[in-house]
Length: 496
Image 1 (cartoon, rainbow, N blue to C red):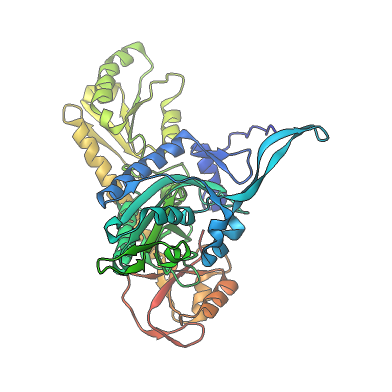
Image 2 (image 1 turned 180 degrees about the vertical axis):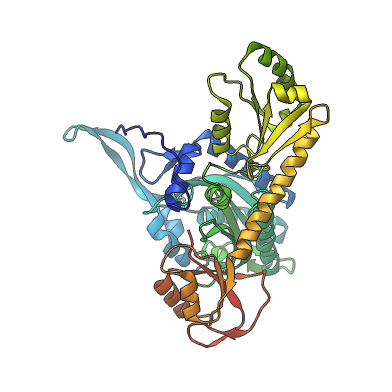
């Protein structure tokens, strides 16, 4: 069914309506668009370019830690999910299910209808533990076959009811790692190693500071013994989960009867991990850095790091500027430089357009610049302008500016998190800090460790325990709700 073309509109200011600002920005910067399939999105080249940069960086980090890529089918026999009770319970309501194959004409309704019912339904993968562990059962016999360290880049289907571009859609892209080990210690070490890989990626590439730590029993992954998480803070004070790494113990090995002969000539079940991040990271990136003008992208992830805007309409001005622009095009090729020579648009229009798209560094080159022997640089994150000598090593100067910008973006986000993290001592103080709605940053509070108290707090305030944080020392106290002993503070927040 055809849909009406949207009118081009300015981006709604963050302070006016943060949710609308986010959607406006994703659409206007051409990161993604709505699909004719409800709950799904089309990732446009600008958005997919970001995902490619993320994918390539993470893929290199995985391979540095000994992992290899493989691919498993997206169709999973429904009986596989039934083998792991906790897992199927956690995903049953989110599964998309294929029940028929083929189409035939439907004369009564003038369309098409499914033709043949399948002998057994197939689940569209919500995650791949079950099919992978079926295959591992075919591949593992001895301790010599271990460890298996496999990652796959794939799509996933989860039948979400309330969707939002990048943050929650019925189909999304991700990577999922699945590893098999001979001992529990090796598997736990794997899960924490990947957590550190994710932390480095978030902070060194995305310029997003994250809290790391364990999820509570109520919040952990279905079928996991322990779930480790990374939690970021968006500009509206909400938490957003930026990745998870799970220690699965022997749960899936037992469900799929995956055993191995140990070095002592006995048989034991294999120990497992799984871990993943998704295109949700693009949403987190937008929410943590961008502004009312458009995207603000960290240089290490920007598809194009530099745009050159020649300035001059008269022929003599163009003739003066053109050789400099061509030199810049050649020298700055490693930065995937764009040269915007479209004479039909004014410089101001071009500036606004490239700010919308988040290009980290803009170079302005006009007659005055050339005559002065300089170039004018404008940083996207601060809007700050400076000049550099045209006769110098322009590429080195650009690299220096991009490195400064990358670190500055991380520091601003770190300062923002510090300013929006507070310690509370009582439940009244907790509720006052949260306010009636919206984000209120990270709240550090004591909790008695029970699921009942955790659920009560969530029901009454819509805040959840994001993690038992690694970054803060254990500090005994009393639960803000029950007054019972608490071994440490945990991190509460409202979240996406």
